[in-house]
Image (tube, rainbow, N blue to C red; front, side, top):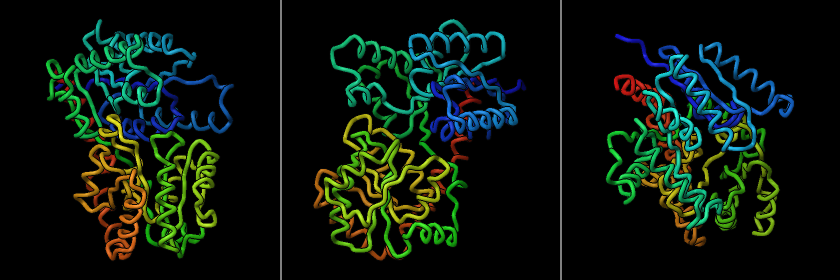
Length: 410
């Protein structure tokens, strides 16, 4: 039997950024014992990094090397139209001279690099799609209808979906959307689309009862019911509506406190809270790195996850939902969030609401927080059980391993 094919895993990001660290490097390291990997990333100049970023970069490279994973750093030049051919040239070299047989591309820009190489070599292309980014750019105003830029992006998206040897999406609703899209139905083969939701390393969130009590004591949460929001200032995270609902809930339940974990800064969140009239003596604003998130979540009692209604969000799989489950946090969520809404409703993992109906949403949240199911810890136990069964990163490692093995045989 031939040895497993070598895989090039491509990020259009630095090794120090959250996405590689949370959604790629751990699974690569876990699989590196039975398969050879090379990681390609785009890195800023060393003198442009902070001392902390330099330390993290050096530690990450050493960590990869110790696992037998090669790393190819490419410079960030500030133009995608230069970085795309640069990345494609590096991949072509790896395919022709370093034994790479599969190119695993995380999102559209790396997949464009892989597409160029796939056109001139017999390598296999894995398009790890992650999201409907053309639609997201439309939502955010980066693309406009009727423009050549949008037409090219749509063409590229279709080309990637038609040519890739395997496609990974993050939800069953995502898969159904692609297979039903009129511009894809004639050529998109369903057997090439695999569903792998965003999962987490559960060991990062493992905190026993004493550890949880310690976190709550240190933060002054001992006697409170703590609701936590994690997100950015982006409008689609609906931080404003989250705070509207939180304010109504807090007016009904005196023990509820609200914590906003916001990046990159808390300034926007604090301004919204002041405008809405949240009781600031029961509100906390936090910025937290990757390592700081698990104890923060594990010390809370429930999570907020409201997302703007849009096709790109109806197929998503927010990583924070996996983190909430891993921390045992029943979740207050908007309707129509990928597969998440169905999981919450079918498995009793929290409560789904219409976030445009603030009064009705607040009543639903108050009812849930006042229930024996929540107060007695039964809902929390279900979330932890769900995480152990569905959200463990070890399942992701198995899923990608199966895809690689399939591509080896083609």
